[in-house]
Length: 411
Picture (tube, rainbow, N blue to C red):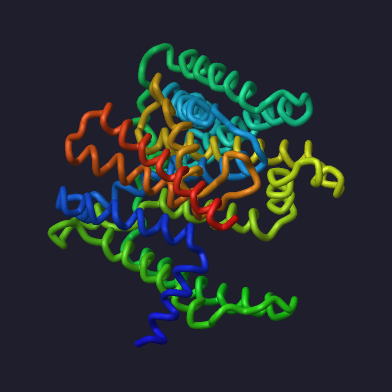
């Protein structure tokens, strides 16, 4: 028993900040579960993560932006602009109309699929151009990110109003496109996916230990590493089990399964986490944020790195915009409004330093989950919007104060 306690203590203290964040999330879940029993219902759990995914996807890129000492205030309306462009392409038949003329014998299902693919490609291209536009001004013309992205916020909001002309553009003719955010992976495939994720977590443990051994880096306890991987694997499997059933345990097949958007978010989070820890771009980003002058003297191309990061941020705005249009099923005049606040708050809650040089993708994902859990739980308790904003603001301030206190104690 003491040995198990020592293992658990080692697991907790090794990544103290991340573990405190997870404990805060669990406390929020328990609190809302007691206050509103339906908070833990399978239906609600199935809805929370897709709602959070749109914010979390952009938070994965925002971590890099803030780590380099920058900020992007345009992400909300940037994603909103992409979403209304996607909705307009489908609403006005800009793509499927010409396709039907060119290929009159094309089956309806294939027409929807091709239309969806072209729409996604065009919207991803738009997101990349938006990131390139802002990144070029910031990196090459040395204009402060706050000013550039604040200007971008107004420009993208103008674009939303221009495209929508003050009305909602409903996506009613392409269910294939809406499947991106509303689709569910069937139960069997969901369990297979969860098993693969669990296997990958354990394989990663041994690969990481082998790499450390190769370079002479001290190894942590194998039991601690395996326990950590096991906890994450159990969490993934538990989520899949829950979403494969409804509150009463029985549901139509069409209402059961892992949301596709959650899988997309997971893939992006893993990819961006890998970039942050295992690539030159990630190392350069942290070096620039930690000490820009030292990074310059060491030969890092600061302008190129920052430009690349804002282009990536633009691409993730594109992904979130595509998902937003598919999730809502329309493009609206208020699309993306306020998202930038939740994205930035997710990063800061997750431990990303506003001074740069510190932050993780994992922390941002947990931060986004905290923000969405608060919003969801407070809405279920019928708490008014003004009180919701007050509570989220206080939580953010307390998180920053706690982080500052921990840093002072370490110093």
